[in-house]
Length: 417
Ligand code: ADP
Ligand code: ASP
Ligand code: MG
Image (tube, rainbow, N blue to C red; front, side, top):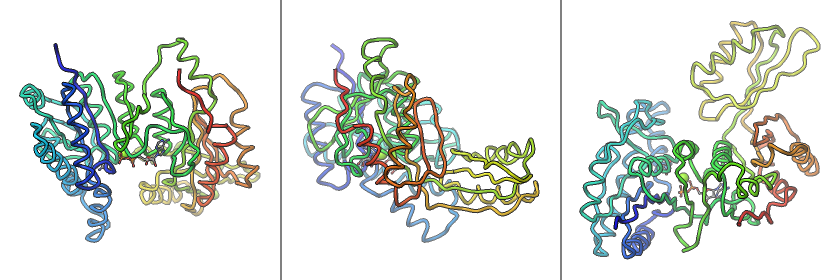
């Protein structure tokens, strides 16, 4: 009989030091004893990636992206080799590889590369020999043999892509919490663990700031219908399943029963205001076209009502794009004869997410009510089919999350069959 093939990913906190790496090795031993075939993706030890970025910033504010990838990819090489050694110590056959060695081919967008193809021949060969194959997460190689990385949190993507390429039976994401919660349990200790969540909700939560899963990995899992299990590497407990229930099934209806299933907070946004813009057709198009040409993701947009022939346009961008966005906004302002560009990065975006919203009204009103009851001023609003987001003052972010969590009664959400 064919052995069940499992792809597992262990995040930075799960391999933060050598003791934790030894614990991961013990867990792997249990799977091997049950006769499983294993491919294990690891992140860099603890906060290594942040530390490497900090090192580079001591040299220059503007490092070359190619060299950044050379630097950051080293983190995952360390953890994968150490895990292989820990497995050898337990008498388990294991071998570690870099992304390049196992044929993870990407485009050449350094620091945020996309996976184009995975050869995986080398992995299959080693699995046949009964070895645990360990792959350094978060990295790949271009066809020209340049090392790339897949964007922050990219080891999740490595795991999902390998699960697809190897046609694995399961893909498990091990982290430092017991699964996906209604909100970040570090902010709201009353948060409840969800037994299950749909790809769409998880994708929305991840894009709106829930760092627990990288959004691109969820996109890929959804595209190929690869169910993911997110669980703790510290406990032996069932985690959360991310998947799609069959349309119109009892289960799908059950999941839509909850209006809101999650709340997220992001402090990675900044607001720009272009003042005294002429209020006439085509002006917004000019500004936002320039931003999109430079790959800047604009999230919320508000154009104030003009009483004169001039108006202000405010919009938010990720903080990482702020410098570029300000430069573009200043140039646009000159071209279109507008006024100053004001920047405010003392903001946070709080969002509610839930598939149940599609079929119910009054959800946004309830959100605004909760924020008003807590004296939290809303500066901007944006919505999607399954989410509502508000931009507020940064120091009120945690309070907003807790007030919404209680307003929507998420401490008692039931999502088990
Ligand atoms: P890893 O090192 O395993 O990749 P991360 O730090 O990237 O782990 O993600 C796990 C963290 O995500 C948790 O410790 C938790 O604080 C945070 N988090 C944010 N939102 C959620 C959520 N809705 N459910 C679970 N964890 C969340
Ligand atoms: N080490 C990388 C990061 O911190 C990738 C990952 O952990 O998934 O972003
Ligand atoms: Mg992560």
